[in-house]
Length: 377
Image 1 (cartoon, rainbow, N blue to C red):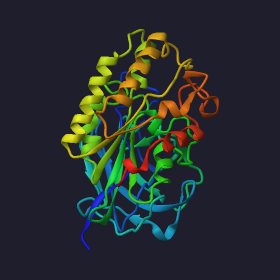
Image 2: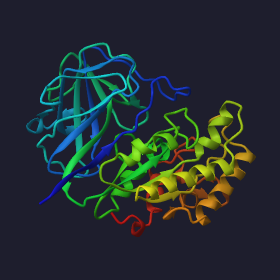
Image 3: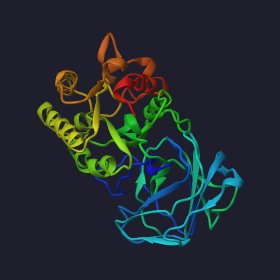
């Protein structure tokens, strides 16, 4: 049987020194960082991708191991496996660089919680990170990568230095990429339960899977919280091994974030042009592209995000998404989660509490809008 590597897990990263920050990064020194990576797909072997993309100094990883999680920060001891890089147990990733581990003969299934433990012996500087992954990580002193449990570890709610896990699968296996903002990354869902909308979509699929490249606060047109979608598309979609489809969810932050700084929102014409460009580049690469309508966020608790002008632009762009014919399919998230009596507002039973982000039930409603026939993986 011919095999190939495809993405089983992804984690989109941002710079610790972005212009807008919803959460601060941190540094490490003589510490072990243990992180939980929930695999969207499985395979006969795996490899791990690490990054120092936004680092200002070389990043030394003196030891690294993977295992299946038992619970919390505890691993299943018999699955504990050493990671090597070019045959070596220690590696240094230059500032701006990335690295892929050697293959590990550890069979994993979809839905496995893989535990990645990294010993970082030297002062790292502020880490390249995923700022709102809806998952807990663990930090403890010294080299503890082989420890089964982390009973006194510090808990952290960001993810650091890891961008993905690939798995070895039969030739022809393909994946979709959920490319978007906080409605994909999982803000508002219950942390540690894997109830982000892409996770819930995966539970509906009988074959293939979706990996998550959402960044909370990310914008289609402007760099602020992460590189703008138009700039990160090549890296976070086209370079994902096995990708055949992309689902996009953008627009809320292009409309709302400028108002927090007293600036005008993106125009409908600019958003339409940006969406059209993503569709063009997807089709040029041979990918099918599915687009979400922009969800409602009227009366958001975040000052300045909502206005009559923003509401009107959102309606205009959504009508174009539904009828413009640019995408291979549309999943109408806005219609699914809006309050029927006040369509610029989230339904109360889908509201996480800030009138902008979906709770677990809302994430399920979002996942349910995707027509599986349009996502034939």
